[in-house]
Length: 111
Image: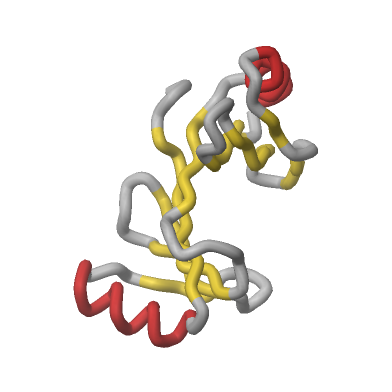
């Protein structure tokens, strides 16, 4: 549904340590992400990941949109900015910043 939180990832310095920590703390079931840069969290809603080598030290969230092209255009009209849209088998995403500097992502599932 548009506007719902659809995915999150936690950037970490050491994916193995983070995997042990969050699995023990929150009971997460983890599987290796394609490319070996972290883990997919299999038992959360929304889906999530632990990713090594990304900037930041706070969770990054993605919101569901029905039309990512329109949403990116709307962000720019509202004074924010967005990256180029990344299109892949599961859908499309864009990294965004609102008009106050808050970072977030958009995700449109494949149809």
